[in-house]
Length: 233
Image (cartoon, rainbow, N blue to C red; front, side, top):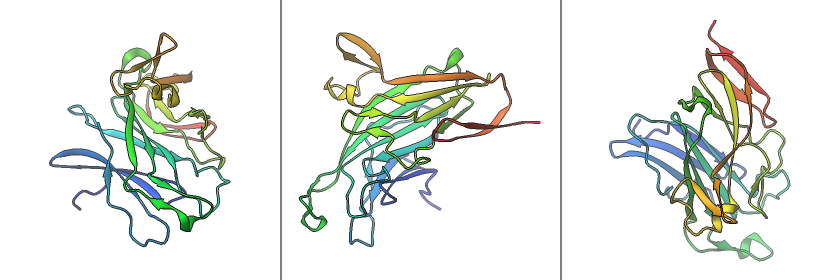
């Protein structure tokens, strides 16, 4: 099937989705949303500043919004979201999505002002232990406890988002910086932002575990970092 998605991630209580597709013109990541009282999704919107290096491939997509919190009511619409993509070579993108609608007390009074604003916060090469390409890249489950994984008031992740597993069996857990980059005015230029006079990495390694396992072929990670590994026998 032409343009069949290679990866996808659902968010905003199932009303929004991002796709990774590849065709003759290259790889793209696009976003679609199902608006209230609509039976058809919106037209796809491409996420900006995404280009794969030669021979690289996307390993995972992850998207979270301000209504994926286990509390927001059925009628509340998404205002903000974050989309992340990481490749097999450890290249990581992080985008901010902001809706262009305003609402007062009811959903019927919402005013849609067009497509969402999408900005690349940063592209970054994850510094994997040993400097090698990761053997596996996968998301840390964002839905396990049905609570928000981001503090949207301070733009602070409340849990890890990505797990990389090195070829030597080292598990590394990562969080993207979100709000800090908004203060620089030049988010996409370079891997670091200037904050309080110092350089700050775009992604933070929150911890690692050296399992010593060198034949891992499959893994899954829960929202509280409980990780299951499958090895070659």
